[in-house]
Length: 282
Picture (spheres, helix red, strand yellow):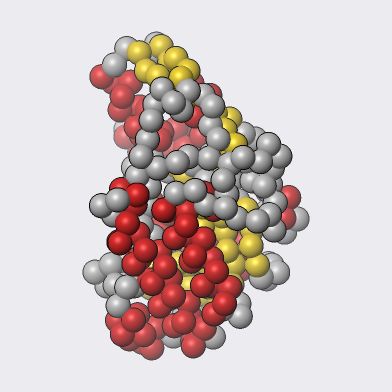
């Protein structure tokens, strides 16, 4: 049996839809069905479900709030919650999938980050997610850690929706042009999670985003290329945010590709996603 945590989130919902398409049975839980910060509650669900595969999608992702007002919750969910899930998964003999982030790196490397490069998180969210990685590695004998970045998709708030919403209200937009990374479509990420399990890939850490890279400014231009909106590039200093963002956050995808998984470019993924959105809205 498959168990999903955070099943109503951006990735969890995408994963549920993909499993439905494949007619695969699963148990979906969100914080109301299983509070991952409650060890006894987690153990009770695992005892009932007896999962063989656990997709741990539950996470605290409010990056800026994690710096102050959400710091305690960030730690509680991303560290304590992950520990509870990892311990329950190990006791059940289940394979654990832990979704992590490019924010475990400092963004100072001008080359692509390899899976074994040393982590050096510079914000509270990144620190908590990296702590989660270390917890998984110390507890789990069967695990996949999948680091991803710049996630967008149909479900939940993300950069694509933000740009489209702002374009409806403003004729001119400014977007940061000195932060470079790889956008990730939730569909691609969900497909990769299932792929790793299907091919019995080697356990360990993987990087998964869509192929090619861009700045947030270039991403915004592609999102709004069919509109008349004027988009101007600005520096990170001109657009200050509470939490540090890595400047150069391109993760190497070769290990993911070596499993036989075909990774679309972010441009291809975005185009398909936007077409799907139009279809849904009609």
